[in-house]
Image 1 (tube, rainbow, N blue to C red):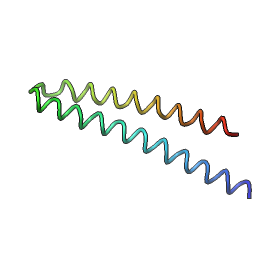
Image 2: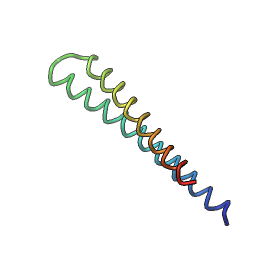
Image 3: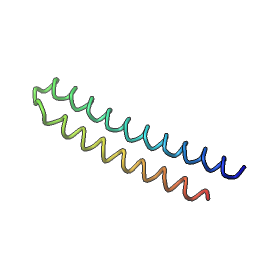
Length: 72
């Protein structure tokens, strides 16, 4: 029974990490594209949004992984 619980915990961790990374990056990209269209600065805010989204996703992922590891 303990093996099944660990498998479910691992699947939930992977799902959370995937959702956080994907969501953060997509929000950064779309926000950057929106700002580029608004201010006519074609690739500038897209790149900035991508990098900010990636950074936010990595920090969120690290926080989630640390939370899951502290429950053991």
